[in-house]
Length: 406
Image (cartoon, rainbow, N blue to C red; front, side, top):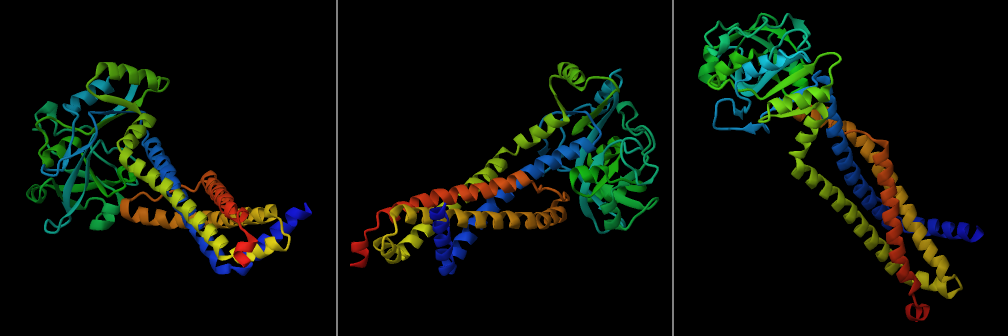
C-alpha cells in the first residue's frame, strides 16, 4: 500500500509539473467523450420522442400503403398510397372490435390570411372533432365529411379549418377568422376557410405548423379526389379487444397494406433511417478511436519528452515497475478527469441542443439525458486511457539510463 501511495503521489506530482500537456490530454479525452455521449443520447432521445408521440396519438394500429413518398412535381408534394380511403375507413370502423378508424392525408398547402402573401404549411385531412383531436378553442368540425357524398365529391364543402397554435400566431387568426388554403396559389385564392378550432394534436405529432381540413376538402383543394388517396388509417380498438388479434385480422383482410402497432410503426420509421443511424454510430466509433489515438500519442509524447528525467529516476534506483505503474496511473487519472468533464459538458449541452432542435424541427426533446450513457462515457474514457497508459509504459520499461544520460 505504501508503494502504491508513493506511486500515485509521484504520478500527481508529474502531472502538476507538466500542466500544459496534462490539460491538452484532458481536453482531448473530454471532447471524445462529448462526441460519443451526445451521439448516443441523440439516438435514445429520437427513439423516446417517437415512442411518446405515437403513444400520445391515442391510436392502437396504423395502416399504411408503404413508406411516405415525396413527389415535388405534384400538387401537395406528397404521394399518398392508400386508395379509396373513405370506404376503407368505413369498412374498418364497422368492425365490432374497432372503436374508431380515421383516414388521414398529409399534403403541403399554401395558406394566407389576405389572399396575397402565402406561406407553405402542412395540410392534414382528418376528422378534427372533439374526441379525435385535442381542441383548446372552438367546437371543431361538423360531423362527417359531407363533400365526399359517397365518392361523388359533389356535396357541399363546409369550408371549415382547424389550425394549430403556431399557425394561429403566424397568421394572427382566431375562431371565425378566415384563411385561404389550396394546393396551388390559384386554388388557394379561390378557397376561403373559416377557423372553427385550434388544436395542437397534429402539430405535436408532425413537429410543424398545420392546418386541418375535412379529408375530402383537402383532396379537393390539392386535386387528389380521383383515387380518394390518403396517407394512413389510424385505428383505436374497442375496449376489451386484443390489439394483436385485430392487427392479425386486418393484415389478413388487407394484405396489400401494412398494419402495425405503435411500436412496430416506430420501428419501421427508424429502419427507413438506417443510413442516418449507421452514420451516427460510425461517428461515435470514430470519435472514440480518435480519442484513443490522441491519448496514446500524447502519452507517448509525454514519455519521450521526459525520457531523461525518467531515466534519471531509474538510475537512482526507482524500479521499472514503479515507473510503469506511475505511467499507467497517470493515464487513468487523465482519462477519469477527461471523462468526467466530457460527461458534464454533455449534460450541460443537452438543453441547448434541444432548444435548437425545437426551433428548427418543432421537437424539443430529441436528446435524452441518460445517466447510463454518461457513466458509459466515463468508463470508456478510463478504459481507453488505461490501454494508452499500458502502451506508453512499454517505452518506459525499455528506457536505458546509460543511453539517455550518457
